[in-house]
Length: 267
Ligand SMILES: Cc1cc2nc3c(=O)[nH]c(=O)nc-3n(C[C@H](O)[C@H](O)[C@H](O)COP(=O)(O)OP(=O)(O)OC[C@H]3O[C@@H](n4cnc5c(N)ncnc54)[C@H](O)[C@@H]3O)c2cc1C
View: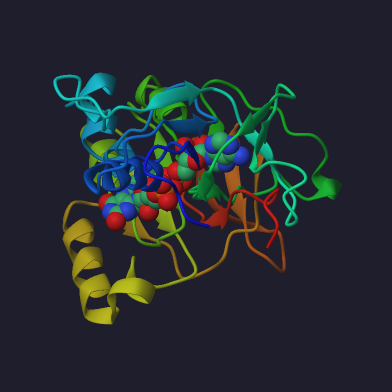
């Protein structure tokens, strides 16, 4: 598929990849229309900052937006509207394009899919434990997008026991913001002993762990939490085989991993 210099390019997914795809195409001289569809209600922003400066309140939402208001990319942002399918037939009888959740068909000369990933969440509990009722004080949080970060930022952590589930490439970062915001304790529950070791190697993981332990962060013995549930005024992370409580906490933040988005696109 080649894109004529004045053709219409549709980018599905308004994340870092979508923004930089548009930036790159423009830099290489594309003069035609570029439309970026994003499920989220805001145009592309700097997601990594969500677990760092944004969580501590050091930067505002507008500081994270990738498009420079002084020198904006010439693109049409369509925010808050997800793409649900690709259109177009190989023999050209149906033009190439995308279908959005509102039922509309949007023709294009080329389509780039940059739908990234969604957070893997844990089931609230085993079916045997019955329905869970979370309160404002005791509830799990997920940190994947700006709204998630906003919810966490607006929650008082003063005196709370915070459990961070998962220790992949980024979850250790919010530990310091949590501690700074007055959490009584911060505990990491993860399948690996040292945060980030799977990607960054054991020596780096070990030094990240040591630095956090020096600031009072605790690391539970390696275990993969499979569910969270609320019992007797506390939240518990349950281990895979026994579902016995592993860790009591009043606030759990899940950084349990991610799964690719965009399952509607043909493989
Ligand atoms: C809290 C947090 C902290 C992180 N910290 C770091 C870090 O310090 N260093 C680092 O290297 N990486 C970090 N990462 C990872 C980094 O953010 C990702 O690698 C990066 O965001 C991937 O960009 P992307 O554009 O491919 O995907 P995404 O950021 O997932 O963006 C995809 C976008 O597409 C949208 N979308 C999905 N499906 C559709 C659809 N059908 N229609 C329309 N839109 C759709 C989504 O809503 C999303 O906005 C962090 C991630 C998180 C969540």
